[in-house]
Amino acid sequence: MTQEATPFALAPADPQALIALPPAERAAVALNSSVAEQQLRELVTRSAEIKSVVDANGRKEVHAAAMALKNARVAVANHGKAAREDATAFQRAVVAEVERLAAITAVEEERLFGLRDAYDEKVAAEKAERERLAAIRTAEIAAAMQSIRELPVVLAGADSAQLAAKLGELANKEMTEAEFGDKLEAAKALLDETAGALVRLHEAATAREAAEAERLRLAEEQRLEVERLRQEAAERERVEAQQRAIREQQERERQAEAARQAREHAEQMAAIQRQQAQMQAIMDMQGLADALTTAGQAGDRAALEAAVAKSRAFDPGEFGAMAAMAKMARDAALPLLEGMLAALPVPAQEVVAEPEPEVQAAPVQVPVQDEAEAPAPESAPWPGIDWDEPPASAVPAALLEGPTDAEIVEIIANYYGMTFAEAAERVLAINVANLQELE
Image (tube, rainbow, N blue to C red):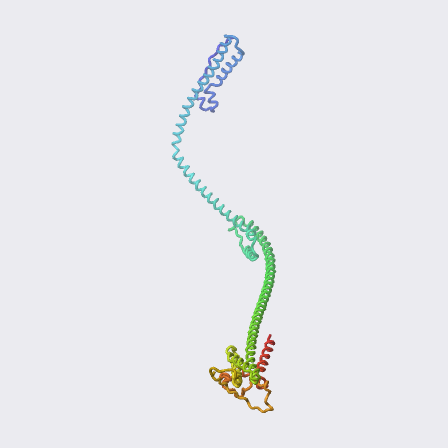
């Protein structure tokens, strides 16, 4: 069954009714929503019976119902568009009117708000300054209290003198409200707590310093003991070194003295050996005269000639300090030998080609003695020599200036009735014995 679609139409709204209504109700009145809603629901109810399309008539019926719903929707939309355009125009008019009316009071409003804002800014600045000063004050109080609170930490390693000085400062410190404000009581309590902590630190520092002083005292005693031992060791080493140096010096001196004595001994031995050799030569010269006395008496010309030649070749200068003695022995023996040789007869078979120069023998003075006092010929000192008044040829003038070794030996020989050779041998034996004692 086909239903006829009733055209959908919305009645215009009453403008006066719209002014006092809220926006939602004003929109419902503008769209005549109560009537429109009833009609729209009726359209939906009529088409609700269509369940399917089975033929062309059914399609036509469905199409007609759908178009009725569409036309109703379009009509509602168009009516709403017209209502919106009217509302938009109204909005613009309202905005313009608002701006016109606002312009009337805008200048005065701005002036008044400027006065208000200036006052508010002043109040805000004053408040900010008070808050700033309050913050500074709070920070100062906190810093003052923190400086008191930190004293035990800051002075943890201080000595007892520093802690005592700080305790004295705290005892004399005036806790005033000007410094601590509303924190005065808390600051006083904190000061008492800090002073107690410093007292404990002072006691600990005093004990620590006493222990350190004792340690230093013991260390100083130990150092002094070590220094004393070191000085004693150094003194012992010095004394030992000095004694060692003295011993070494004494040893060097002993060795030097031994070397000197050895040199002197060697020199003395060499001198004695030279004197022995020289004395032996002198004794040989003296003994030559004594030995050849028998040869002269026996007329042994050859022996006398050999003795004279040996005496003439005898050089006293080779005898050093004993040169005078050697010269005296030669000068005493040579004239005697030459005299004995001259007294011998010339052998008959000898032909003298040329006369030889006559050898002038030194005068020989034989002292006159009593027969009872005359010594035996073999024990006479030097035969033919007067020892009380020696000839100038026998004794050099230089020997007369003082006693020489030869003179001393002669004096000993004359005093004891000995030959010169015997006296010289005895003197030499004494020198050798003295040297042996020195060794």
